[in-house]
Structure formats: structure tokens, C-alpha cells
Length: 311
Image (tube, rainbow, N blue to C red; front, side):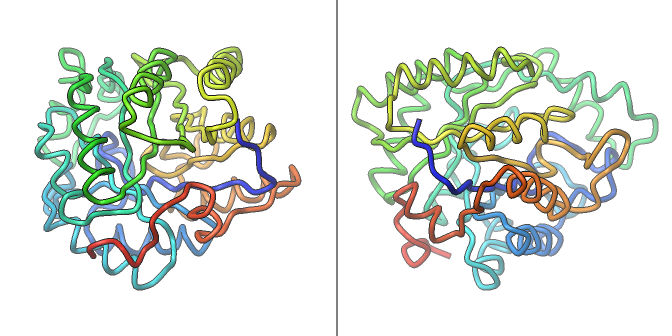
């Protein structure tokens, strides 16, 4: 693992799994996404991980025209790295998932490193009043669906975006096998180090939110990638702050945001993405960590620069 005195904070602003009925603070419209993204950057996030939603009812959308309603506005108002999803939402085709990145030619995109079950159906049991009729079926459909990321699809996304646009990746690894998938991709010379690996804990269907699993993921990544990878950690729900703290404590990077958890603490909804960024920044600084600026994040991850995107 590449260790630095500085930690990159990524903020995942809205995502595609949480639904409007879960929190009134979840940003839905382009205006809301832009405002919360800029505020998160001002609070210390060097990277903003971005999905889009239909502004009429908050359902996930892959429409690049919706992305373009907030990407230029965020770029104009802050210097953060804008990281566009290629994971999209369950049920989206690879063409849909690539549409926004093809349009925007970003510095950074996410790249899920394997097919896996992504169970959200349990969340539907906790909501009794729904704002929109699409929400409950969307969540419950995860009982009988999967997040599809075949080897061919992974290779297609990586080779096209890296080869055509110079885009680099946040490699999202939901289980140990995904690290080996990334090692295979690197052997094909489709992607080059340093690898920015987002280790994800606590998704139903992925590796669990246990400290032993954290240590195991880091150990295997070290075995596979040596000193050619940057650790970042994402814990979903109640695991968010504890796992981010673990990453910071060993010299890694962190991801927070309303995509991953709607809460600031036990029983307390976060009122914004910036609140979560402020909280983890405070913890990291108390651990003696410095917070990476967007420029420093670009240098660490060898990104092409904001002047070479298409928005």
C-alpha cells in the first residue's frame, strides 16, 4: 500500500440505492446535487463521486443530459475531482452505464470489479410511507437480481475510458475476489498503477463489516499490488465512520456521503453530505492526518487534470 501523510476524502453525494422516502436530505434534483457537492468540497472532499437522478421523482437515471445539468456547475464552483459512476443502478445496461462518461470524458470514474448480489430489499421493510410508487419495487427487486459486471464488461469499460479519454478509476471491490479480478485486469495491461482501490464493507452480498475482513482485504491487496495501490475505504450504513477511521489510522483514504449512509450517528440523519465530510475530517485530523487538496489528489492518483474533461 502507498502510504501518505495526507488522506483523500471522497464524498459520494447521492448514489442510486437510497430512495427519497428514506431521507428528506437526499439530493435529488440537479440543483440539490450541485449545491451539496460544492458544500462537500468546501468541507474538505477532494473527490466527488456522482450519480444522477430523475428530478421528477428521484429514481436513478443514466441520462447524460441530466449529468450535464450539474457537472459544469460543480466544476465552475470548486476544484474537486468529479468522479462519474459507471456502476449506474441495478438493471442498467453497459451502454447506459457508459453514457455519461462517454459524454463527459472525466478524470476519474468508478469501476465495479465483479458481479455480485447487492441486497437492498431489507431496507423496504423499514419504510411505511412511500413518496413515490417506484421505490418499494426497486428495493425489493434486489432479491432476484444482481449487480452485473462480467469480465468482458469490466475490460470494455476500462479499455474504452482509459484508452480513449485518459480516464483513471476508483476500483470498487466488494469482496476479496474482486481484488483478484483487478490483478487480472492489470495483467492484461488495460489499466496501470497506481491503483485507487475502494474496499467496500457491509453490503448484503459483499464482504461483511468486520474488522477481520478489513485486515484481510488490505493484506491481500498488499500481496497482489505491493507498493502500487492506494487504499480507500467505504463502509455502508453504520459502518461508515468506523471503517473510514480504520483506513485513516493506517495511512489510507476514506469515502463518506449520503450514497453510502444516510446517518451522521446512531438514530440521527445527516442533513447534508458536508456534515459527514466535516465529521470524518475532524477525526482524521485528530489522528494526525493531513487532508489532501484536489490538486494533491490529482498528483497522487496521476489524473489528467480538470482542463482535459469535456464539461
